[in-house]
Amino acid sequence: MSVYHAGSRTVQDRVGVRGQADHVGRAVGDTLKPVAAAFLELQPLLVLGAADPVGGGVWASPVSGAPGFVRATSPRRISVAGGVAPADPLARALTAEGVPVGTIALDPRTRRRMRLNGRARPTPRGLAIEADQVFSNCPKYLQKRKSYETVADRAPGKPQRGDELTVEQQEFVSRADTFFLATVHADGADVSHRGGNPGFVRAASPRELSWRDYPGNSMFLTLGNLAADPRAGLLFLDWTTGTVLQLTGEARMEFGADGERRVRFTVGEVVETEAAVPLRWSAPEYSPANPDPAG
Image (cartoon, rainbow, N blue to C red; front, side, top):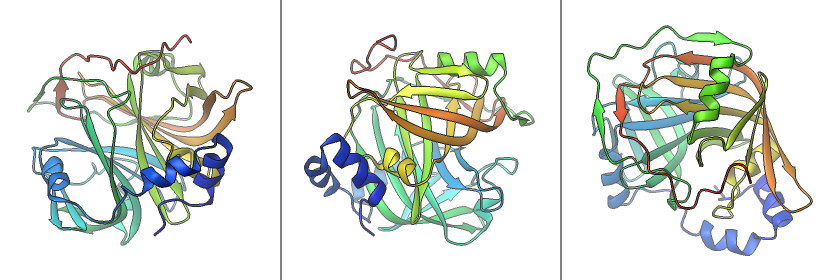
C-alpha cells in the first residue's frame, strides 16, 4: 500500500511540502522492528480508530491493560488482549473480520509515540491486527507525564449519549491538553495525536469545535484523510479520573490568508463514560513546542 493517497497529496501540494513528505514517508514500513515491539509491550494504553460499518460514524476508542496486553506476535501482527469495552461505540465494528483500523500508542513518560494501521479481526482473547503501516512520530506537542498508577477498584460508569455537548463537556474540552483524532480513507484508517496548552481546542457551540493545525512532519495523513472523507472521531481523556469523551462527526479544513490551517469539527454524536480507563497519571509538563493558544 502506498504511504500517501490523493487526499494527502492534495494537501502536501497546497502547503508546498511534497518533497519533504516523500523524505519522511520513507520511514513508514509494514513490519515491527524489535524496538517498536518492545515499546508496545511497555504501554498500558492503546487508542484505536475505525468506522462503524452500520452507523457509518468514525470513532476513537481507548483500550487499557497491564503492560504486555499489547504485544507483537509476528513482525506484521499485534495482539490486543481484552479489546474495547462491550458498550464502546466501536465494539460492533470490531466483531467483523478485516476491519480497517488505526492505532496509536503514546507514552507520556518518554514523550514517544508510534502508530500501526492495518486490519483487525476478533480473537478469543481480544483482537489481532495485521499491519499495513508502522511508523513513529516526533515528540512535538506531546505533554510529559512522569508516572501513572492503576486504580484497581475503578469501575466504568454507564455511557451517557447525546447529540451535542453539554456545558460541562464543553468545559472538559477547553481544559484538554491532548486529544486523539481518528480518520479514514478508501483503503484504511488512522489515529493521530493532537496536543497543546489548555485552550488549544475551542468549543464554539454545543455542536462545533475547532483547533489550529500546528506544523508537524509534513505527511498530512490526517488532513489528507479529511480531504477525501470528512468523517472523524475525537477522543478526550481525563488523565486523572479516567473519564473519556468520544465524539463522532465531520471535520473540514480551513486555510487562512496568512497560511494558518484550522480544523472545524461538527458534532454528530457524543458518548461520555466516567472512569472508563483505570489509569491515574501525574500532572503534565507542557511541551515547550506548544504555541500560545490565544495566538
